[in-house]
Length: 78
Length: 258
Ligand SMILES: Cc1ncc(C[n+]2csc(CCOP(=O)(O)OP(=O)(O)O)c2C)c(N)n1
Ligand code: SF4
Ligand code: SF4
Ligand code: SF4
Ligand SMILES: [Mg+2]
Image: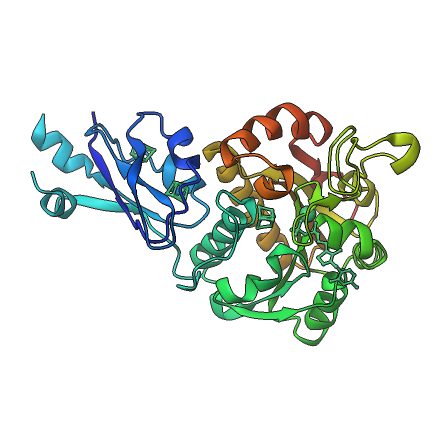
């Protein structure tokens, strides 16, 4: 499977959980920690992200940056 | 493998558009306004319109849209955004012009301006955020509030005998000859967001060709006004909003005679 990952800006996340609902891989969850504004923020909690961008697309606050393995690297790896 | 190394080997496939400012948005967690702003600005970036577009912000929760959209913007008095956009477009026909308005703004206090702007076929885009409530002022009933919807001014639920019917202003204005492209979209799932993005693309392409008014309704949420968690609003949209406000194109260019 194509491998991906996300970078989450924990300080602008408002913990709305819409990205968690949108993730088909169940890769995200709310942290127990809170950010400076008092929100529990989202974290990548499983190593199974495919870089599909669903979470980032629905995030109201543009908190998430998504990376995906290029097709070339994917071929090299398999 | 450390995360940085992993990222080095990967391509960035999604990031915040450069057409949004770094300002922290004041919107409540999970608010559809913020998604709509972001997607609108993604389209502006992808179509290379940043220097060539002027937006008009409404009164309502999105009154500060100009702080977030990194383009030229003008604030309008409550309900008058489409009239202000008319003036801007007539003075600067070389620019892309849009108004961004809530349901209280566009379909209550601004009904006259909305109808006459579209009836004149002004060559602008109107983005209409329908969250079925007055979000900014504390969750009062809007013309678009649903049957039975509890708001601060309809605490027992919207009652037709007393409050009339939910106003489907989008269907109403689609009858006007000046309306070129009329569609209803949403932003609560990845797929609806992708379709909204396509609709924005269409609208700006039509504006380039001077086709007349394009109108995109966005069925949105208001977690605070609806007194729900953002997650609960997703179900409410699917089960309550969409049956009343079904998604899809209402008027497409092939239906136009001109
Ligand atoms: C002339 C005038 N009348 C009333 C108000 C109060 N007011 C501010 S925003 C608003 C309604 C906003 O609702 P909507 O357009 O749906 O925006 P939302 O906050 O839901 O996005 C009202 C009635 C005002 N600012 N000016
Ligand atoms: S959608 Fe965005 S703001 Fe909401 S919890 Fe996820 S990352 Fe945070
Ligand atoms: S990119 Fe896709 S798989 Fe990865 S966390 Fe986001 S939604 Fe889940
Ligand atoms: S009150 Fe409603 S519309 Fe306004 S920012 Fe909060 S959730 Fe969004
Ligand atoms: Mg509203």
